[in-house]
Length: 432
RNA sequence: GUGACUGUAGCUCAGCUGGUAGAGCCCCGGAUUGUGAUUCCGGUGGUCGCGGGUUCGAACCCCGUCAGUCACCCCA
Image 1 (tube, rainbow, N blue to C red):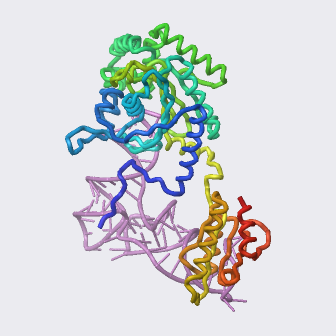
Image 2: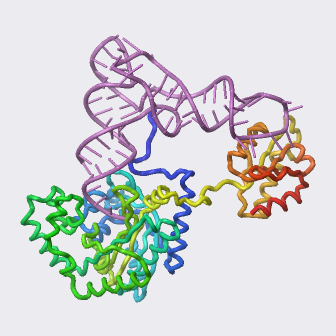
């Protein structure tokens, strides 16, 4: 019988790594909440139409990366490839955008059918942030300041750089797009294959092509910034002023465009060179037309998402995993019964387990690991040592009969002591 | 979707020009009957990713397939 394997690109999170994830998630949540952002949760599954209308029909995500299928009623559903669309849908559906602003965040798995590689999976996890109802560059800046603070909290500030750009309004972008296509069509045969294809589908994306030849052709191409209207310019300048004032460094990358159609005005990416080809760790931008596109009243929005796997990878490669995430128990409780433990009601195991309960009751944050499954004294001691616990609480027949406990310090020179239960508990509770 | 490289014990890997598998770590047990990390001794564990083919004989050669890695692409 062959073994069933996990689906390609969908990883298990093993216990050795889960505490690092918890650390990251709680650090992020704490940071976002300190800015007044509140968590929203929505389903993993949505009507396919939602993503087609928001992300854009001709984007790669919609064209070839979505997990789409018909449910039993024949309705086309899609496993969410990103969070913004669902977030807007949920807000609209519950009137969260009616005459009010919202600062929201969410966290969870996203699904894209891509070839897996470092920092890229088919089921991957994002923590996303969206701010609705605010027009000005101040909220764009707040998001950026917030992420900068977060990198500081995680200790990865030195490894990430901020790139920003302005895509302007849909109208100015359309005019620019025409000019760009006209220019590039003239040199079409010199473009790389992918860029030739994008000329008709998504010409803006040619700007961030990695092909050096294509990049050299772009030097003489029309520049997006020259096509921006006055309002876009002002918005971008104000954003820059706030960042300057706050001391957040950035690069203006005029080639920075994004793969989702709904972005306009501000776009940005936090990138690192420590992760190989998938170096974008956090990215987003403004999407003033999206709410309306999905059937709501015109409502400005800005947001971003960060890739959890990539941040985890970054923490690991930079050796920024705090020691506290390697949780070992504080106390390892042995239960060594002799050969003849006649009295079941007061076996060594029962006594040891009841002591553990008392400890947890007195001191809930104490991590007590009760040894279960018997074994020799020696093997239990070995496990106590291996567990990383600072203290082995030795409970054998002597202790059970005399209602005493033996405290042995595994990582310090303090002598082992045997005390009456009450006194021993007092001492153990003070460990934390 | 394209390309390159890889797939041997739970983990990290060795295995010469083809002769049906080995090390280290881990785990378990022992070295005076209740005291851990060192040392010593012993032990468990693999249809060599899977399926075909070539051959007297395949972990090794060939084809296919699945998976992993990295890059393209895409993006978080």
